[in-house]
Image (cartoon, rainbow, N blue to C red; front, top):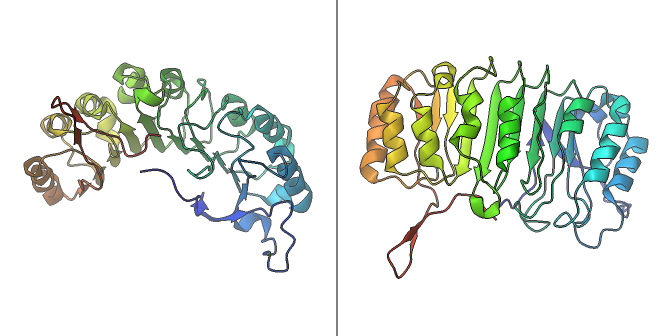
Length: 322
């Protein structure tokens, strides 16, 4: 599976693409009120007519940005080989012009523009520091992603979507001081695309010593899904969760059995394991054990398929890799 469509909504608002430099046709939509949409600003990844910073400058001059609540950074020129350093500088420089900004998604880029694991990323630290009022932040792409340990008082939802999240970035998230965070969603990916984290890198999150308000934890899209589930089976953080998401990865009977035989999960409202490599028997066991307690369980195999080579070695894949 790849990411084939742009965000349709973000931070509870419908996404609206700010018109391109040449979009002056009569059919071009009029600009909505600044606070009513999540503004998506992007340029062509190939042969762009303008740079992202130029499109952003037009946005700042065309919209009453003091009323803007959500912003989506789309593609920049040659995102497959160019780091977004200049974009980050432009965003940080505009901090005073976006006082109402509460939601920011960085790199809403789809496969036709650049595959998720090809997106060259940058340092998210300055962005979070520049916008202390953010309540939701998301970033896509793990290639050269830097996420230092930060303190942010108001962030409630953090999403990092990658085909391979660097261990250093995982450690940065895990070490961050985010007292208001309710939802944490990490796509850890595979070693083939730079996802070199292991369970130890997640220890501050699993131990429950940070993120005091966390109620939804997603550690997914990982080739080490069994090891993650084994750790979650005794992780203190699980006892205070309402939702646990270990979907989209290489989850087998080993990991699911560890979850079932570990600490109770009957307090959860939802357990998401979709896209998995479970046997029919274990899938049934999960449902029969947890659904009577009121847990909504998604154990659908979806499109998870194994390949076996001529030597008998079995290959399993995460949902979003390249």
